[in-house]
Length: 473
Image (cartoon, rainbow, N blue to C red; front, side, top):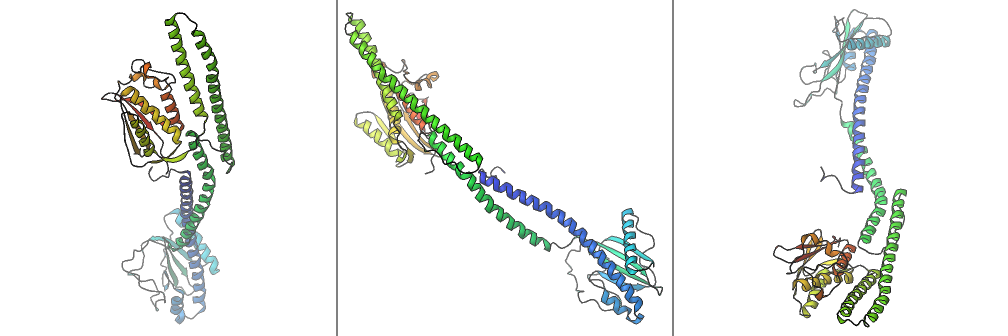
């Protein structure tokens, strides 16, 4: 059932509307069928009573030699008139109290139609077809009516609900009447409601599709803008369209996007200002350190100042890169990673690349290339070699950079992503770096909506796994 249930808002709304329509039509049909059956039985009884009263008056006004012709002409489908010396209906009523009351009511109605107080008897019966064989009833002394066609032998015969009447005639004879109505009326009338239901369902589908499209269009635009914002792309404010609830949501998203952009700009400017302002005191301290007589102390202070200078320059460069807005475009990730590996191989670095021939992906190529370069340089610097592997997976591209270094303690795998963090046990200060490479790489990957993690390889070394979200290309 979960697989059949649609996941989109449009599909769920349409299914719910159609389900409500079908349920309402089904309940209406059940009620209508019951009311129709009651109305058909009532109409049939009224017709039988009216025709019986008419036949009684006609028999008493015509000579006896015409009575058979009158009975033949009055008889029709499942309605038979016969004249007998005795009543075919017993004088006592039915055992069922409700049926007995209904019989008395019908007898009174028939006597009122005849217009006198003669003896009238009525019996309501249910059961199988009382006539033998497969022919409709007709009077014994006359030709069958024109619509008296044999019923097919294999046709199921429905239960019968009908009336047996007996009316005393003035000459002492009795007019006996048997009328039956099947309890299961024809279902041919269901064709029109079925067509009406289908047409209504089509109309609801069209209206629902147009309405849902009007609602979901701004939602799709909002989802796309949120995805771009999560990847770090700058997006223009969304148009506030659709229902009021959707417009309020869009308005809140636009305000959030503006606040985030303002916050990021303020943070970047602050970092750049701090890094820039630190240059002056560092230069001043370096000049003063030159006047220290103790050479060992002077060298240590100069080394510390040099490290502070490198950290300041790296922070300033990072701030400049953050403040630059690179436009997203579709590039070949395989070609990008391959060119990076080739460039480093030309510098006598042990870098190997494996991956597909082509992998198109929308990204900010300069920033992403810098992130990959940082990972490869770390692998070469601390692990002697780098093996770059690019894979196209259903969940998005995955790029793995492996090295053969000593690895990183498990409890410090997450710590190395913090700015200015270097691990003394496995990362030598003499190799250079200020501890911003992995922080910059992860920041760039997060800006693309992806993730970057480090894991220790079973055979030794570290694997940096860079994953990116899937694309609709």
